[in-house]
Length: 359
Image 1: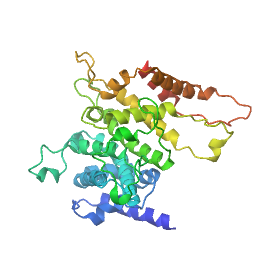
Image 2: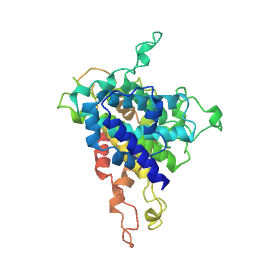
Image 3: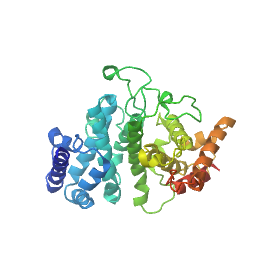
Image 4: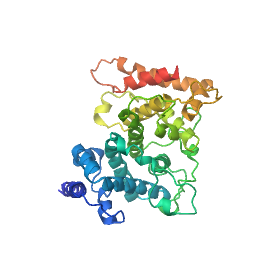
């Protein structure tokens, strides 16, 4: 009953937002906090309780309120990074902001008049005179997502027993120590927690949503109009580029859907890793396909993901990647005497495309 009440409260907040035509004050935290409180605990609820028609109506009839909603959600993510996202309440707030942005962004991208919205600055940042040129909202969002992908006790296991009162500074953390999986360029085997997989998956899906802006634009030459989201994420401006690429690659190539081979184990236990591998595969495909340096005389690609992939050279790294591809590509061919007793992965197309990217 309580869960139904919280969903009802969230739905009331959505109706209140979409029915108002007058701007709602950005400083009215009691109103805006309704959208990322603990009322909603999964992405399916957000997609159900925030209908597409109401997002479009909000965009057309009260654009300032839609803009404020996005600003406030990104602001919450940035503040969570500043505080190291150390409490369960903060982590739930982050996930709800991520889900809301994942829901709303496509309806911003589909309107040409909103095309430059995420490349403008946060309103409160522009008031600071001692700062250098303020960051576009898109950069603030991408920086926060990347920091949160390597957040101890949220998306990775903590290396130090620091506790909530002495959490590590996410903006200064060495994320190369927190690569998600052993394999290429990383020998340690971090502990595995399903909750971390789930949080990573939701953050990666928001990244994919950001990358999807190209789908809503007329066909253009990549060299004249590159996808700025991908361009920033794969550039030297992203200090997490190397550990992110390595984490994605190792997560895909280390995945074993069959595991110990116990019959029907996939029917008894949920697998939090497959959705993560699926999202990681899609991120790798999209980023590795975004090469703006073709035809130029530059010695190294602008896209660091392409650069890092080209620098894989050790025999053990090639062997690890090849074993991963072979294991996953052979998965549909696994036959047993017991029908449907082994798990079948659902991302064969993505795997084949990624294999071609590596050839």
